[in-house]
Length: 135
Image 1 (cartoon, rainbow, N blue to C red):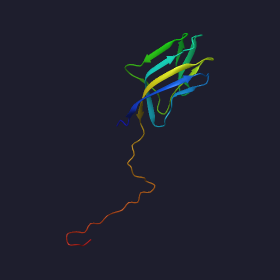
Image 2: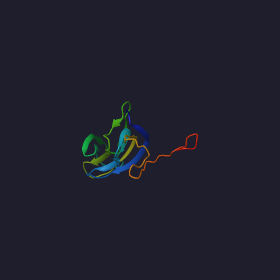
Image 3: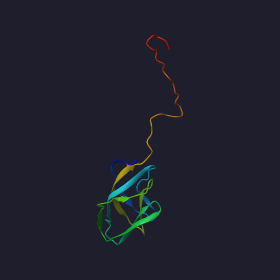
Image 4: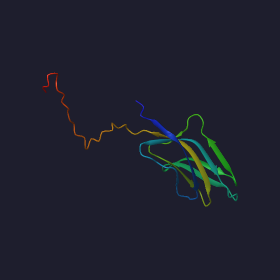
């Protein structure tokens, strides 16, 4: 049984300007994200910038941008699937700033609920009289 439900197409624009990881796609418990497009733009124009995209704490892809460079990565076919409950981060190898635009699809993979609060549920039976009025 497939519990995966698409919850929508989302976009974000983030400025990555640190050597420590900067959150691009926020992690959500019970949700998996599939990247469909990533745009990287270095607008300072003074030197090369190396940005590394990360899933959680693990490195995914390093990109090197030239002065005033732009990379548009359309992930066609199979999207870049992130692990369940993880997000996408970016970090630079030095000083500077890189604008990152990401588009992704979120999938809800939480277990379905019945709508009954089991902590407060009290079962009850409604008795119906028979044809002669007896119970």
